Image 1 (cartoon, rainbow, N blue to C red):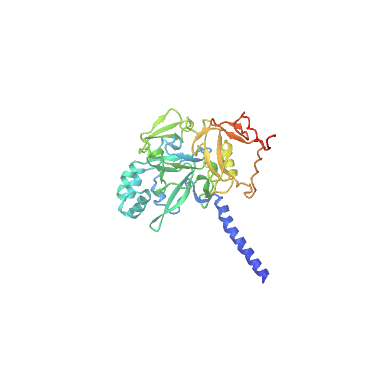
Image 2 (image 1 turned 60 degrees about the horizontal axis):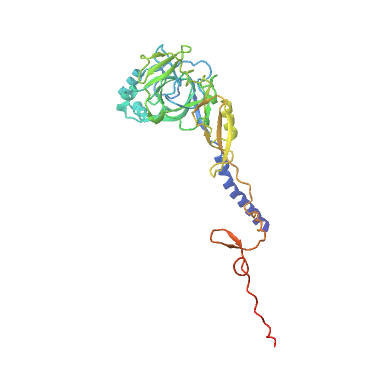
Amino acid sequence: MRNTRGIGRAALLIAALLSIVGPTTTACLPAKIAVKAVARGAPAVAPFFGEALGLATNLPVDGPPALGGGVHKGDRPGLYGGSRNGQSCDKAKLGAFLEDPANRKKAVRWAEVQGIGRQEIGGFLKKLTPVLLRNDTLVKNHDYKKGRAVPFEALLEAGIAVLVDLNGRPVVQCSCGNPLGAFEHDVDSAEVEFKGGNRKWKSYDRDKVVKVEPTDDGEEVEKYELVDVQEEDAGLERPAGSDGAEDTPLTVDPGVGPDGPDDGHVDVPDVTGLSLEEARRILESQGLAVETTEQPSDTVGPGTVLGQSPATGDQVPAESTVTLTVAAAPSTADPTTDPPSEQPASPSTPSAATGDDTTETADPVGEVGETPPAAPYAGGADS
């Protein structure tokens, strides 16, 4: 009977320990997000609009990904590409389809994703700008199934034509008309799945995947500086909301100018929340050096990156150093150990305080220098 009780107590103790250690260990691992690859030219399974509608022209983007991976602002020069030879996205045809009464249900769902009413679609489209992705780009895509807009995380291959809003954010995949939203997770959390016709493309590089954030403070873009994907070392300036007919040539290719990727600068990727080992691998793959500093943390496990400097998305010279603040391991000091005792003061003659905050040696009798009185005579008088 005693042995049974002992086993039961041991089992309860192990369960209690697992309940404490388990969540902590799991919390240290970055969560992975399933992302569906969408290859250029691959037909969508459940598009909002049929490919036969001919809304867009996707173009190949030769060579390796244009920019470093991570987060980029939507107004960055060279982030997007364009072409002088024809439209990459036909806004007029898209608007006509959405305004057709026969497509009312689709139009309502499409507008809901964009956060507008169906009657606002025409004005919304006028402000959008057609561009070509130059990096594989993370978005929240939407299929149309059973009368509903069904969201899914997606990676769009470079060369896919999209419409961007006035803050530079992709909001429509042109070839299928699917409305797009923001990828709301860290870039490094994406676990890309290549299935069916969306086989892994040759230029895919997980360290060069990007997501686009709106311009700072919601400032609207007036003109986009695009790389001409069909003319080597050439650029285009495209007014926001135009369809490409008003493009003007740029004297400097924005893909290799002061803000471009080939000027010896690197975009700092986001490594917060990752383990130090993984963060170091990512940063060093971008040609950056790593230094660390430790900080106590009660919320994450030891070795987890709490912060970084320079910040995510900052552009720094190649071989720059990124300082990572890492959660420190718990202290190994034994709190039950008694602190070392102080050394006893050496014996000395007692001191007496004086009025001017100094001390003098105390005289056992009277003031300093004063002769003590003679003791009284205890004997009788001579007779």
